[in-house]
Length: 219
Length: 219
Image 1 (cartoon, helix red, strand yellow):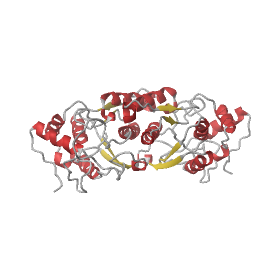
Image 2 (image 1 turned 90 degrees about the vertical axis):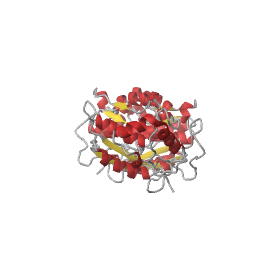
Image 3 (image 1 turned 180 degrees about the vertical axis):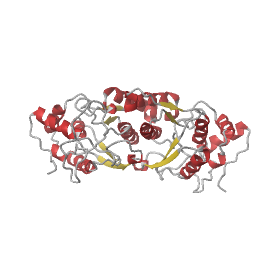
Image 4 (image 1 turned 60 degrees about the vertical axis):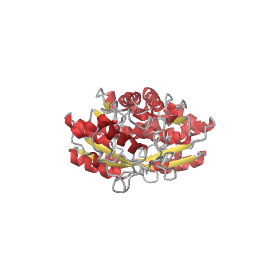
């Protein structure tokens, strides 16, 4: 399971645990400016009862090309626009899912979970169901497990839920939203900016769900 | 372009350069026991005239599961067997191609080259044309470039060639086989063991091509 430390992946972890899965969580320190999410991920994994948690280092900043990995590109804070924003990290989910696939095959796992969502999201192409299906098809041709008939499935239980539905589900499953980091530019403690696209989508989700927004915002 | 430092990827680089491509080469230091191939890759990139070369670090040894990344699993030296050997690294080509995809999108590249070969090879599932086609299909759904209609192609010009044909092509294109590292367990200088599957396949290739084997072997 990919665990970013955000609300969606934390909720996905809680969901999979309720379904009875033994969850091995993978976070990747890829040079993201929101590194506070990695600390959150470690606490979430322990708090919810994951079987294991690994943080792998990978310097995607060496490629640049995104506001999340290139300090010279600012994170937009003037509202969610149409199209794919500069916070898009080229091939990020493909890279993350590939790493998860590698570990999953070593573990003998049958499922890879990812918190991808294609409703209240930033328009990233690698969050769409059609993409996730293509990844799964590729994965089953890529591996020894696939060739030997042990199919791997890619599961994104939140993919068609609204942010409000995800927040309600998170609360129902015992996830504390205040312990998750969604913001693209939090401070070192994980406090959110309240203005980036990720913050706006999350804030709107709390409003639509009619539950108090317990997110810690920067003063 | 993925450049491992082996004979096949060096030949692929020379082939793409002859076709007129400006080649940006990516090598990954993934904890492989044959790290000497990375030094070879750097020299090959400069020697053949690549536009750029990056070595990215990624600790796949954290997952284990392969003789190439786990020091406690020995590399077999008793001859090439049927089936997928313990030198298979789970999801390796998927991880490497995903990283190449990320960089390629940042560069605005249209092609990803890989030295995969499915004739005289170790039976790895992620070297087969059917896998490479599935990766390409997934890649075009994964990226902003793909969504915007700038298709990415995955090219493996050696995929259906025998090792003998690759060796003849390498010589024709000015690749010096002695400067490439194929062995799974070379010494620090890159000298080959002569006994692992990769060495055996290469040695048989030289014999079949009827050209002198200039590989440096360990004393």
